[in-house]
Length: 306
Image 1 (cartoon, rainbow, N blue to C red):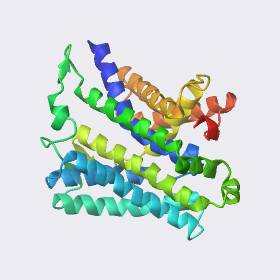
Image 2: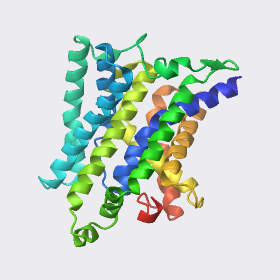
Image 3: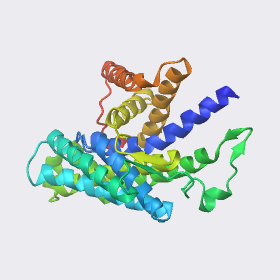
Image 4: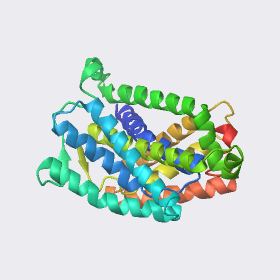
C-alpha cells in the first residue's frame, strides 16, 4: 500500500508540473530563449486562479484567466527584448522582479491583506463538474486527481503538437532554429518570438493555477526554483528518451517531469529533510546537464523533431 501511495504522489506531482515543463520547453527548446521570468509567472497564475475562486468564479474559468495573465507577462518579456533591445536574460529578470511586487499586491487585495490565498473547501477542477462524478478512491488510493490531471495534460500535449504543425507553429520553430531564414521568407521572426514567449509563460502560469487548486493554497514564494525544475525535466526527458524515434518531444518532457519528481520523492522516502529540497533540485539539474553533454544532447532540439 505504501509503494502504491508513493507512485500516486509521483504521478500526481509529475503531471501537475508537466504543464510548467511544457512551457519551459516552448521558450528554451523551441525558441532558444532563456526566459528567467518562470519563477514569477508560476505564482502569478496560482494567485490569479485562487483569488478568482475566492470571489466565486468558476475554477475552470480561473484557469483561463491565469493562462491569459501568463501570456501578458510573456508579451512583456518579449516587448523588453524586441522593442527595447534588451538581452533575453535581462528581459526575463526584469519581468520576474516586477512580478514579485505584482503577485504580492494581487494576493493582498484579493484576500483582504493576507499573504496567502487559501481556497480550502472551495470548488476546484478536482471536485466540481465532471470531476466531481469521478471515483475518489480505488483500492484505498486517491485516484481522482491523477485522472483529472492525466486527461488535462494529454489534451494540452495534443493541442501543442497540433499547433507546432500549423503554419504559425512551423514559423515558431524556424524562428528558434534560424531567424534569418524566417526573414528570407518575408516573415517577421519578432512576432513569432513574441507569440512563443506568450504561450510559454501562459503554460507556466496555467501550471501554477493547477498546482494551487490541487494544494488549495497559493503564495508568492511557490515559484522559487521552478525554472531549475522545468529545465531539469526537459533535459532529463530528452536525454532518457532520445533514441525513441516515434516519441514526440512533448511526451519526452512530460515523462521527464515524472522521472524528476520520482527522484525527489525517493529523497523524501529515504528521510532527506524537506529543507534540502532546493539543493537536491540543483544537484539533479547539474547531473542532468552533465549527462546531456556527455551524450551529445542539446537543450534545443532540431526543428524536425519538435
